[in-house]
Length: 448
Image (tube, rainbow, N blue to C red; front, top):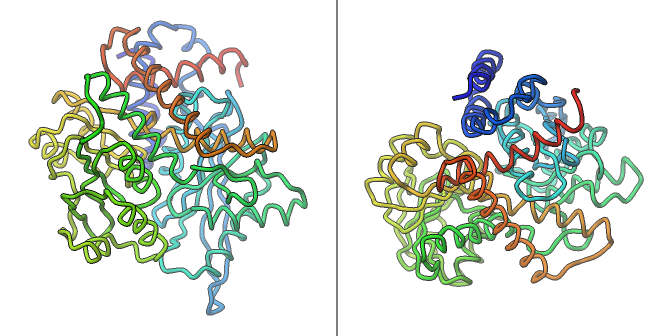
């Protein structure tokens, strides 16, 4: 490994010792781009790596709101504007009780290179709050979103920072956030948030985009091996919007999703989530606020495995689509033992570094999340384009653009890995392709 890379990783581990998620993603990215740093000694002269691993700015603020009983609550809100060298900061807002500076930084750092891979002019950022929307009434969620935007509005705008949704933040929450922004600013800037409702500037297929993009990426991977996606069995985790998009596109392409998971366990459906009724029921599950995948098992009479994860299920493809660090080394060993050939990360950093290395060494084709799940931010950027031009594209137009973007991301990753003598390494290729564009922009814009 390049000595400069090693030193920066060591410094990050020291300076950010209490931020494990952030350390993990920095180590994974910088290790992959070591050959690129070898080829560009000028990076060390301007200390580019130390600059790229520190956010340009990060805001922390209190969010005070009142519940239905009149009780006052105080949460912590965050927005990390990590790197804006290729465009306005872009990245979602996550409302979950485990949100902390480490998670926000890791998500923001990943977002830099994910957004770079899309080929669109958007920088990397992330935000959220340690607010748990589970079990909250609609009115309570509105009050929280309004309080959150009352603090956030100072730092965002169409040419500054454009947040979107993430875990715990869907179309409803984006609506409340946008309404409060409009009230405070007194202007119609519909490009300030993406993931909006269709009635006020949203884009068709945005809710499905991450799942759709993941399936389009998988198509390219299978084509590389001379295989058709039709008839393939897929085991996934999660049952939210991303999993729903995967299932919906799998149904269209003739593939079969056989597992879903939640905090309570996972379901195994040997017939697959392969009817419109089953796919649509996933929306009902999410809207219920119960956060239980067992509801699917009860409705369709399939097996439910309480407290377990679906990593021991045999399938052609495995797609973790729930949350970070969901697949650890013990799960990776089960995956290899089951003979799974394709491991496609859809959630952000769903695999621990040791598990990821083990899967790669075991000969699996590993597809990294920053490439696979870039479909969501791609359609968000397309939404920004539609907003700026006051246009509304058809679902077919958006889908075609998304398919082309995912194909380009795949090709760029393959070409980058091969150009540095790494063979067919999609993980390293994605990091190299995404990093090189950001590094070039930073070099051209001077030292700051």
